Amino acid sequence: MKRREFLGACTLGAAAGAALPALSRTAASAEAKDAAGAKRPNVVFLLSDDQRYDTIHALGNDLIRTPNLDALAAAGTAFTNPYIMGGTGGAICVCTRSMVMTGRTIWRAPDNMGDFALWPQVFGRAGYVTFGTGKWHNGSASFARCFSGGGNIFFGGMANHLKVPVYDFDPTGKYPKAAAREAGKFSSELFSDTAVGFLRGYKEDKPFFLYVPYTAPHDPRMPPEKFAAMYPPEKMPLPKNFMPEHPFDNGELKVRDEMLAPHPRTPEVVQKHLADYYGMISHLDEQVGRVLAALEESGRARDTIVIFAGDNGLALGQHGLFGKQSVYEHSVRVPFLMRGPGVPAGERRDAFAYILDLFPTICEMAGVAAPDTVEGKSLVPVLKDKSARVHDTVFAAYRGFQRMVRDERYKLITYSVKGEKRTQLFDLAEDPWETKDLSADPACARQRASLEARLREWQKQTGDPSAA
Image (cartoon, rainbow, N blue to C red):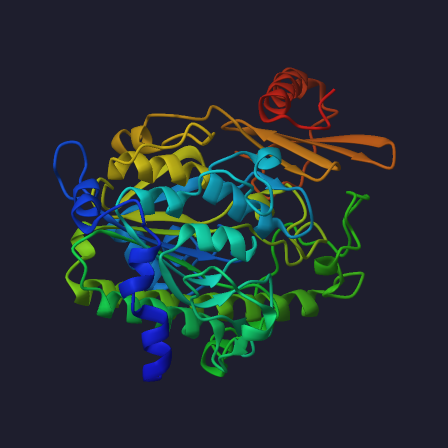
Protein backbone atom coordinates (compact mmCIF):
# COMPACT_ATOMS: atom_id res chain seq x y z
CA MET A 1 0.00 0.00 0.00
CA LYS A 2 1.32 3.43 -0.90
CA ARG A 3 2.10 5.78 1.98
CA ARG A 4 -0.65 8.24 0.97
CA GLU A 5 -3.24 5.45 0.78
CA PHE A 6 -2.10 3.99 4.10
CA LEU A 7 -2.42 7.32 5.86
CA GLY A 8 -5.76 8.06 4.25
CA ALA A 9 -7.14 4.67 5.24
CA CYS A 10 -5.68 4.18 8.68
CA THR A 11 -4.87 7.46 10.42
CA LEU A 12 -7.66 8.16 12.88
CA GLY A 13 -6.51 11.32 14.66
CA ALA A 14 -8.85 14.26 14.28
CA ALA A 15 -11.35 12.30 12.18
CA ALA A 16 -11.97 9.84 15.02
CA GLY A 17 -12.28 12.65 17.55
CA ALA A 18 -14.73 14.56 15.37
CA ALA A 19 -17.01 11.51 15.20
CA LEU A 20 -17.40 11.43 19.01
CA PRO A 21 -18.19 15.05 19.88
CA ALA A 22 -20.09 14.19 23.04
CA LEU A 23 -17.19 12.32 24.61
CA SER A 24 -13.96 13.77 25.93
CA ARG A 25 -10.95 11.46 25.71
CA THR A 26 -11.25 10.71 29.43
CA ALA A 27 -14.97 10.08 29.21
CA ALA A 28 -14.57 7.89 26.12
CA SER A 29 -11.97 5.78 27.90
CA ALA A 30 -14.26 5.44 30.88
CA GLU A 31 -17.16 4.35 28.70
CA ALA A 32 -14.92 1.79 27.01
CA LYS A 33 -15.13 -0.31 30.18
CA ASP A 34 -18.11 -2.36 31.26
CA ALA A 35 -19.99 -1.96 34.51
CA ALA A 36 -17.48 -4.16 36.35
CA GLY A 37 -14.56 -2.02 35.20
CA ALA A 38 -13.13 -4.61 32.80
CA LYS A 39 -11.86 -3.39 29.48
CA ARG A 40 -14.29 -4.18 26.72
CA PRO A 41 -13.24 -6.56 23.94
CA ASN A 42 -12.28 -5.39 20.48
CA VAL A 43 -14.46 -6.64 17.63
CA VAL A 44 -13.36 -7.76 14.16
CA PHE A 45 -16.31 -8.57 11.90
CA LEU A 46 -15.50 -10.21 8.56
CA LEU A 47 -18.45 -10.64 6.17
CA SER A 48 -18.38 -12.55 2.88
CA ASP A 49 -20.73 -11.99 -0.04
CA ASP A 50 -22.74 -14.88 -1.55
CA GLN A 51 -20.92 -17.58 0.41
CA ARG A 52 -22.97 -20.69 1.04
CA TYR A 53 -22.90 -22.38 4.48
CA ASP A 54 -21.35 -25.61 3.15
CA THR A 55 -18.13 -24.06 1.82
CA ILE A 56 -15.79 -24.50 4.79
CA HIS A 57 -13.55 -27.55 4.83
CA ALA A 58 -13.60 -28.02 8.61
CA LEU A 59 -17.39 -28.17 8.64
CA GLY A 60 -17.63 -31.12 6.29
CA ASN A 61 -16.69 -30.05 2.77
CA ASP A 62 -13.72 -32.25 1.91
CA LEU A 63 -13.20 -30.68 -1.51
CA ILE A 64 -12.75 -27.01 -0.65
CA ARG A 65 -9.55 -25.60 0.87
CA THR A 66 -10.12 -23.05 3.63
CA PRO A 67 -7.24 -23.45 6.10
CA ASN A 68 -7.71 -20.07 7.78
CA LEU A 69 -11.45 -20.47 8.30
CA ASP A 70 -10.73 -24.00 9.53
CA ALA A 71 -8.31 -22.57 12.10
CA LEU A 72 -10.89 -19.97 13.14
CA ALA A 73 -13.47 -22.71 13.66
CA ALA A 74 -10.99 -24.80 15.65
CA ALA A 75 -10.15 -21.89 17.95
CA GLY A 76 -13.76 -20.83 18.46
CA THR A 77 -17.37 -21.86 17.94
CA ALA A 78 -19.05 -22.72 14.65
CA PHE A 79 -22.81 -22.34 14.36
CA THR A 80 -24.17 -25.11 12.16
CA ASN A 81 -27.70 -23.72 11.69
CA PRO A 82 -27.25 -19.99 11.02
CA TYR A 83 -29.77 -18.25 8.76
CA ILE A 84 -30.62 -14.99 7.11
CA MET A 85 -34.26 -13.88 6.98
CA GLY A 86 -34.38 -13.57 3.19
CA GLY A 87 -34.95 -10.44 1.17
CA THR A 88 -37.50 -7.94 -0.09
CA GLY A 89 -35.79 -7.70 -3.49
CA GLY A 90 -33.26 -9.42 -5.71
CA ALA A 91 -30.24 -7.88 -3.96
CA ILE A 92 -30.47 -10.06 -0.86
CA CYS A 93 -27.22 -8.62 0.51
CA VAL A 94 -28.83 -5.18 0.90
CA CYS A 95 -31.54 -6.62 3.11
CA THR A 96 -29.20 -8.82 5.15
CA ARG A 97 -26.70 -6.04 5.80
CA SER A 98 -29.46 -3.71 6.94
CA MET A 99 -30.80 -6.40 9.27
CA VAL A 100 -27.31 -7.00 10.67
CA MET A 101 -26.62 -3.34 11.32
CA THR A 102 -30.07 -2.49 12.70
CA GLY A 103 -30.75 -5.79 14.44
CA ARG A 104 -34.25 -5.63 12.96
CA THR A 105 -36.31 -8.17 11.05
CA ILE A 106 -36.88 -8.28 7.31
CA TRP A 107 -39.73 -5.79 6.76
CA ARG A 108 -38.56 -3.46 9.54
CA ALA A 109 -35.00 -2.96 8.30
CA PRO A 110 -35.08 -0.37 5.48
CA ASP A 111 -32.42 -0.62 2.79
CA ASN A 112 -30.92 2.74 3.81
CA MET A 113 -31.20 1.72 7.49
CA GLY A 114 -33.50 4.65 8.25
CA ASP A 115 -32.96 6.51 11.49
CA PHE A 116 -32.40 3.41 13.60
CA ALA A 117 -29.43 3.13 15.94
CA LEU A 118 -26.80 1.12 14.06
CA TRP A 119 -24.44 -1.43 15.56
CA PRO A 120 -21.08 0.37 14.99
CA GLN A 121 -22.73 3.68 15.83
CA VAL A 122 -23.84 2.30 19.22
CA PHE A 123 -20.33 1.01 19.91
CA GLY A 124 -18.84 4.35 18.90
CA ARG A 125 -21.04 6.09 21.43
CA ALA A 126 -19.84 3.59 24.04
CA GLY A 127 -16.21 4.62 23.51
CA TYR A 128 -15.11 2.37 20.67
CA VAL A 129 -13.08 3.50 17.67
CA THR A 130 -15.02 2.24 14.67
CA PHE A 131 -13.34 1.57 11.33
CA GLY A 132 -14.88 0.29 8.09
CA THR A 133 -13.55 -0.89 4.75
CA GLY A 134 -15.06 -2.86 1.89
CA LYS A 135 -18.60 -3.19 0.59
CA TRP A 136 -21.29 -0.95 2.08
CA HIS A 137 -24.46 -1.46 0.06
CA ASN A 138 -26.82 0.69 2.15
CA GLY A 139 -25.96 4.27 1.26
CA SER A 140 -23.21 6.64 2.32
CA ALA A 141 -25.27 8.43 4.97
CA SER A 142 -25.60 5.31 7.11
CA PHE A 143 -21.88 4.57 6.71
CA ALA A 144 -21.04 8.06 7.93
CA ARG A 145 -23.14 7.49 11.05
CA CYS A 146 -21.31 4.26 11.85
CA PHE A 147 -17.59 4.85 11.49
CA SER A 148 -14.99 7.21 12.89
CA GLY A 149 -12.41 6.03 10.36
CA GLY A 150 -12.11 3.91 7.25
CA GLY A 151 -10.64 3.50 3.83
CA ASN A 152 -11.18 1.85 0.45
CA ILE A 153 -14.95 1.96 0.86
CA PHE A 154 -17.17 0.50 -1.87
CA PHE A 155 -20.68 1.96 -2.04
CA GLY A 156 -22.17 -0.61 -4.37
CA GLY A 157 -23.31 -4.17 -4.87
CA MET A 158 -20.92 -5.74 -7.35
CA ALA A 159 -18.07 -4.89 -9.70
CA ASN A 160 -15.15 -6.40 -11.57
CA HIS A 161 -12.94 -7.41 -8.65
CA LEU A 162 -9.95 -5.66 -10.20
CA LYS A 163 -11.86 -2.43 -10.87
CA VAL A 164 -13.92 -1.83 -7.76
CA PRO A 165 -14.69 1.91 -7.38
CA VAL A 166 -13.70 2.89 -3.86
CA TYR A 167 -13.59 6.02 -1.71
CA ASP A 168 -11.17 7.32 0.86
CA PHE A 169 -12.72 7.94 4.25
CA ASP A 170 -14.35 11.36 4.54
CA PRO A 171 -14.99 12.54 8.12
CA THR A 172 -17.66 14.92 6.80
CA GLY A 173 -19.63 11.94 5.47
CA LYS A 174 -19.79 13.28 1.91
CA TYR A 175 -19.04 10.78 -0.83
CA PRO A 176 -19.76 12.33 -4.27
CA LYS A 177 -19.40 9.98 -7.24
CA ALA A 178 -16.58 12.11 -8.59
CA ALA A 179 -14.44 11.17 -5.58
CA ALA A 180 -14.46 7.46 -6.41
CA ARG A 181 -11.34 5.84 -7.82
CA GLU A 182 -10.28 2.40 -9.03
CA ALA A 183 -7.61 0.98 -6.76
CA GLY A 184 -6.40 -1.51 -9.37
CA LYS A 185 -6.11 -4.42 -6.97
CA PHE A 186 -8.24 -7.51 -6.39
CA SER A 187 -11.05 -6.55 -4.03
CA SER A 188 -10.33 -9.16 -1.33
CA GLU A 189 -6.68 -8.12 -1.24
CA LEU A 190 -7.52 -4.42 -1.24
CA PHE A 191 -9.93 -4.61 1.70
CA SER A 192 -7.60 -6.91 3.62
CA ASP A 193 -4.69 -4.51 3.03
CA THR A 194 -6.75 -1.74 4.60
CA ALA A 195 -7.72 -3.88 7.59
CA VAL A 196 -4.13 -5.02 8.08
CA GLY A 197 -2.96 -1.40 7.92
CA PHE A 198 -5.48 -0.42 10.56
CA LEU A 199 -4.45 -3.23 12.92
CA ARG A 200 -0.74 -2.54 12.52
CA GLY A 201 -1.15 1.18 13.01
CA TYR A 202 -3.63 1.15 15.87
CA LYS A 203 -2.15 2.72 19.02
CA GLU A 204 -5.26 3.87 20.91
CA ASP A 205 -6.12 2.69 24.43
CA LYS A 206 -9.78 2.46 23.50
CA PRO A 207 -11.24 -0.76 22.10
CA PHE A 208 -11.98 -0.89 18.38
CA PHE A 209 -14.71 -2.21 16.10
CA LEU A 210 -13.26 -3.22 12.72
CA TYR A 211 -15.76 -4.09 9.98
CA VAL A 212 -14.47 -5.79 6.81
CA PRO A 213 -17.28 -6.72 4.40
CA TYR A 214 -15.85 -8.36 1.27
CA THR A 215 -17.38 -8.56 -2.20
CA ALA A 216 -16.12 -12.12 -2.78
CA PRO A 217 -17.19 -14.67 -3.76
CA HIS A 218 -19.92 -12.63 -5.52
CA ASP A 219 -19.75 -12.73 -9.30
CA PRO A 220 -18.04 -11.94 -11.54
CA ARG A 221 -16.30 -15.08 -10.36
CA MET A 222 -12.72 -14.44 -11.41
CA PRO A 223 -10.34 -16.23 -9.01
CA PRO A 224 -6.63 -15.46 -9.41
CA GLU A 225 -4.85 -18.10 -11.47
CA LYS A 226 -3.30 -19.87 -8.47
CA PHE A 227 -6.72 -20.43 -6.94
CA ALA A 228 -8.49 -21.24 -10.19
CA ALA A 229 -5.96 -24.04 -10.71
CA MET A 230 -6.98 -25.66 -7.41
CA TYR A 231 -10.34 -26.70 -8.83
CA PRO A 232 -10.39 -28.27 -12.31
CA PRO A 233 -14.01 -27.96 -13.48
CA GLU A 234 -14.19 -31.52 -14.76
CA LYS A 235 -13.44 -32.80 -11.25
CA MET A 236 -16.16 -30.80 -9.53
CA PRO A 237 -18.99 -33.07 -8.37
CA LEU A 238 -22.50 -31.97 -9.19
CA PRO A 239 -24.77 -31.24 -6.22
CA LYS A 240 -27.15 -34.06 -5.34
CA ASN A 241 -30.10 -31.78 -6.09
CA PHE A 242 -28.83 -30.65 -9.48
CA MET A 243 -31.66 -30.04 -11.95
CA PRO A 244 -31.60 -28.63 -15.48
CA GLU A 245 -34.56 -26.36 -14.58
CA HIS A 246 -36.56 -25.50 -11.52
CA PRO A 247 -39.70 -27.66 -11.66
CA PHE A 248 -42.16 -24.75 -11.38
CA ASP A 249 -42.34 -20.95 -11.39
CA ASN A 250 -41.10 -19.71 -8.01
CA GLY A 251 -41.75 -16.08 -8.94
CA GLU A 252 -38.15 -15.15 -9.80
CA LEU A 253 -36.81 -17.33 -12.58
CA LYS A 254 -35.63 -14.48 -14.82
CA VAL A 255 -33.80 -12.28 -12.31
CA ARG A 256 -30.21 -11.29 -13.20
CA ASP A 257 -28.59 -14.10 -11.20
CA GLU A 258 -30.66 -16.72 -13.01
CA MET A 259 -29.44 -15.43 -16.37
CA LEU A 260 -25.75 -16.01 -15.60
CA ALA A 261 -26.02 -19.49 -17.11
CA PRO A 262 -28.03 -20.80 -20.06
CA HIS A 263 -31.34 -22.65 -19.72
CA PRO A 264 -31.53 -25.56 -19.31
CA ARG A 265 -28.54 -25.91 -17.00
CA THR A 266 -25.89 -28.36 -18.11
CA PRO A 267 -23.45 -30.29 -15.92
CA GLU A 268 -20.46 -28.68 -17.63
CA VAL A 269 -21.68 -25.12 -17.01
CA VAL A 270 -22.48 -25.86 -13.37
CA GLN A 271 -19.08 -27.47 -12.83
CA LYS A 272 -17.30 -24.43 -14.27
CA HIS A 273 -19.24 -22.02 -12.05
CA LEU A 274 -18.62 -24.18 -8.99
CA ALA A 275 -14.88 -24.35 -9.74
CA ASP A 276 -14.65 -20.57 -10.00
CA TYR A 277 -16.78 -20.16 -6.87
CA TYR A 278 -14.53 -22.42 -4.84
CA GLY A 279 -11.46 -20.65 -6.18
CA MET A 280 -12.87 -17.30 -5.07
CA ILE A 281 -13.57 -18.68 -1.59
CA SER A 282 -10.08 -20.15 -1.21
CA HIS A 283 -8.58 -16.82 -2.27
CA LEU A 284 -10.84 -15.04 0.23
CA ASP A 285 -9.72 -17.49 2.89
CA GLU A 286 -6.09 -16.51 2.26
CA GLN A 287 -6.97 -12.84 2.70
CA VAL A 288 -8.90 -13.53 5.90
CA GLY A 289 -5.76 -15.28 7.12
CA ARG A 290 -3.74 -12.11 6.52
CA VAL A 291 -6.14 -10.05 8.65
CA LEU A 292 -6.10 -12.62 11.46
CA ALA A 293 -2.29 -12.80 11.31
CA ALA A 294 -2.07 -9.01 11.67
CA LEU A 295 -4.40 -9.20 14.65
CA GLU A 296 -2.11 -11.78 16.26
CA GLU A 297 0.96 -9.65 15.53
CA SER A 298 -0.71 -6.66 17.17
CA GLY A 299 -0.89 -8.49 20.49
CA ARG A 300 -4.64 -7.84 20.71
CA ALA A 301 -6.02 -11.18 19.52
CA ARG A 302 -6.70 -12.47 23.03
CA ASP A 303 -8.87 -9.41 23.72
CA THR A 304 -10.76 -9.50 20.42
CA ILE A 305 -14.00 -11.14 19.37
CA VAL A 306 -13.62 -12.28 15.75
CA ILE A 307 -16.72 -12.97 13.69
CA PHE A 308 -16.86 -14.49 10.23
CA ALA A 309 -20.25 -14.74 8.53
CA GLY A 310 -21.95 -14.64 5.14
CA ASP A 311 -24.75 -12.41 3.89
CA ASN A 312 -26.59 -15.06 1.86
CA GLY A 313 -26.01 -18.31 0.03
CA LEU A 314 -26.21 -19.25 -3.64
CA ALA A 315 -27.76 -22.08 -5.70
CA LEU A 316 -25.25 -22.60 -8.55
CA GLY A 317 -27.20 -25.45 -10.13
CA GLN A 318 -29.12 -26.69 -7.13
CA HIS A 319 -32.83 -27.07 -7.87
CA GLY A 320 -32.09 -25.74 -11.37
CA LEU A 321 -31.38 -22.30 -9.89
CA PHE A 322 -28.25 -20.13 -9.92
CA GLY A 323 -28.95 -17.22 -7.62
CA LYS A 324 -29.93 -16.56 -4.02
CA GLN A 325 -33.51 -15.47 -4.66
CA SER A 326 -35.12 -18.47 -2.97
CA VAL A 327 -35.68 -19.85 0.52
CA TYR A 328 -34.05 -23.23 -0.03
CA GLU A 329 -31.24 -24.08 2.37
CA HIS A 330 -28.56 -23.21 -0.17
CA SER A 331 -29.78 -19.61 -0.25
CA VAL A 332 -30.79 -18.76 3.34
CA ARG A 333 -28.25 -20.73 5.36
CA VAL A 334 -24.82 -19.10 5.74
CA PRO A 335 -21.44 -19.61 7.44
CA PHE A 336 -21.08 -18.21 10.96
CA LEU A 337 -17.92 -18.57 13.08
CA MET A 338 -16.88 -16.79 16.29
CA ARG A 339 -13.68 -16.71 18.33
CA GLY A 340 -12.51 -14.72 21.32
CA PRO A 341 -13.26 -13.94 24.96
CA GLY A 342 -16.53 -15.53 26.02
CA VAL A 343 -16.57 -17.91 23.02
CA PRO A 344 -15.92 -21.63 23.69
CA ALA A 345 -12.99 -23.03 21.72
CA GLY A 346 -13.33 -25.92 19.30
CA GLU A 347 -17.08 -26.32 19.73
CA ARG A 348 -20.17 -26.49 17.56
CA ARG A 349 -23.62 -25.09 18.21
CA ASP A 350 -26.63 -26.64 16.48
CA ALA A 351 -29.13 -24.10 17.80
CA PHE A 352 -30.85 -21.89 15.25
CA ALA A 353 -29.26 -18.47 14.88
CA TYR A 354 -29.88 -15.44 12.72
CA ILE A 355 -27.06 -13.22 11.53
CA LEU A 356 -29.15 -10.29 12.76
CA ASP A 357 -28.72 -11.77 16.27
CA LEU A 358 -25.09 -10.60 16.17
CA PHE A 359 -25.94 -7.03 17.19
CA PRO A 360 -27.50 -7.91 20.58
CA THR A 361 -25.06 -10.79 21.11
CA ILE A 362 -21.94 -8.66 20.83
CA CYS A 363 -23.60 -5.88 22.83
CA GLU A 364 -24.10 -8.31 25.71
CA MET A 365 -20.58 -9.70 25.40
CA ALA A 366 -19.09 -6.19 25.40
CA GLY A 367 -21.28 -4.80 28.16
CA VAL A 368 -22.90 -2.30 25.80
CA ALA A 369 -26.65 -1.70 26.08
CA ALA A 370 -28.53 -2.78 22.97
CA PRO A 371 -31.09 -0.24 21.69
CA ASP A 372 -34.77 -0.96 22.23
CA THR A 373 -35.22 -1.02 18.45
CA VAL A 374 -33.21 -4.27 18.15
CA GLU A 375 -35.40 -7.32 17.46
CA GLY A 376 -32.64 -9.94 17.29
CA LYS A 377 -31.92 -12.19 20.24
CA SER A 378 -28.63 -12.52 22.07
CA LEU A 379 -26.88 -15.83 21.42
CA VAL A 380 -24.90 -15.62 24.66
CA PRO A 381 -27.08 -18.33 26.29
CA VAL A 382 -26.27 -20.62 23.35
CA LEU A 383 -22.55 -19.91 23.64
CA LYS A 384 -22.67 -20.77 27.34
CA ASP A 385 -24.78 -23.92 26.99
CA LYS A 386 -24.92 -26.03 23.83
CA SER A 387 -28.40 -27.27 24.78
CA ALA A 388 -29.83 -23.74 25.02
CA ARG A 389 -32.18 -22.37 22.37
CA VAL A 390 -33.26 -18.79 21.63
CA HIS A 391 -35.27 -19.68 18.50
CA ASP A 392 -37.53 -22.74 18.34
CA THR A 393 -37.97 -22.29 14.58
CA VAL A 394 -36.59 -20.05 11.84
CA PHE A 395 -38.48 -18.08 9.22
CA ALA A 396 -37.42 -16.56 5.91
CA ALA A 397 -39.13 -14.85 3.00
CA TYR A 398 -38.46 -13.69 -0.52
CA ARG A 399 -40.52 -10.76 -1.82
CA GLY A 400 -44.22 -11.61 -1.99
CA PHE A 401 -43.51 -14.95 -3.63
CA GLN A 402 -41.98 -17.29 -1.06
CA ARG A 403 -42.18 -18.02 2.68
CA MET A 404 -40.31 -20.60 4.72
CA VAL A 405 -40.39 -21.95 8.26
CA ARG A 406 -38.46 -24.88 9.69
CA ASP A 407 -38.10 -26.68 12.97
CA GLU A 408 -35.30 -29.03 13.94
CA ARG A 409 -36.44 -31.64 11.40
CA TYR A 410 -39.09 -30.42 8.96
CA LYS A 411 -39.23 -27.46 6.63
CA LEU A 412 -42.25 -25.88 4.98
CA ILE A 413 -42.09 -23.58 1.93
CA THR A 414 -45.12 -21.76 0.52
CA TYR A 415 -45.33 -20.02 -2.84
CA SER A 416 -47.75 -17.44 -4.18
CA VAL A 417 -47.05 -16.66 -7.83
CA LYS A 418 -49.46 -15.15 -10.34
CA GLY A 419 -52.43 -16.06 -8.19
CA GLU A 420 -51.37 -19.68 -7.78
CA LYS A 421 -50.35 -21.16 -4.43
CA ARG A 422 -48.07 -24.11 -3.83
CA THR A 423 -46.55 -25.81 -0.79
CA GLN A 424 -43.47 -27.96 -0.25
CA LEU A 425 -42.56 -29.95 2.86
CA PHE A 426 -39.14 -31.52 3.40
CA ASP A 427 -37.78 -33.84 6.05
CA LEU A 428 -34.32 -32.32 6.41
CA ALA A 429 -33.08 -35.14 8.61
CA GLU A 430 -33.66 -37.65 5.80
CA ASP A 431 -33.49 -35.27 2.85
CA PRO A 432 -31.06 -32.38 3.50
CA TRP A 433 -30.90 -31.60 -0.23
CA GLU A 434 -34.63 -30.84 -0.33
CA THR A 435 -35.51 -33.20 -3.16
CA LYS A 436 -38.58 -35.11 -1.89
CA ASP A 437 -41.71 -33.03 -1.35
CA LEU A 438 -43.85 -34.54 1.41
CA SER A 439 -46.55 -31.88 1.45
CA ALA A 440 -49.20 -34.28 0.06
CA ASP A 441 -48.13 -37.25 2.18
CA PRO A 442 -50.91 -38.09 4.70
CA ALA A 443 -48.27 -39.41 7.10
CA CYS A 444 -46.84 -35.85 7.32
CA ALA A 445 -50.16 -34.00 7.70
CA ARG A 446 -49.51 -33.22 11.37
CA GLN A 447 -46.06 -31.77 10.66
CA ARG A 448 -47.45 -29.68 7.80
CA ALA A 449 -50.28 -28.27 9.91
CA SER A 450 -47.93 -27.47 12.79
CA LEU A 451 -45.52 -25.58 10.54
CA GLU A 452 -48.33 -23.75 8.76
CA ALA A 453 -49.51 -22.47 12.13
CA ARG A 454 -45.98 -21.46 13.10
CA LEU A 455 -45.56 -19.69 9.76
CA ARG A 456 -48.63 -17.57 10.45
CA GLU A 457 -47.21 -16.66 13.86
CA TRP A 458 -43.91 -15.59 12.30
CA GLN A 459 -45.70 -13.51 9.69
CA LYS A 460 -47.68 -11.69 12.35
CA GLN A 461 -44.60 -11.25 14.55
CA THR A 462 -42.47 -9.74 11.77
CA GLY A 463 -45.19 -7.59 10.21
CA ASP A 464 -45.26 -9.57 6.97
CA PRO A 465 -47.32 -7.54 4.45
CA SER A 466 -48.48 -10.84 2.91
CA ALA A 467 -49.95 -12.13 6.18
CA ALA A 468 -53.57 -13.15 5.89
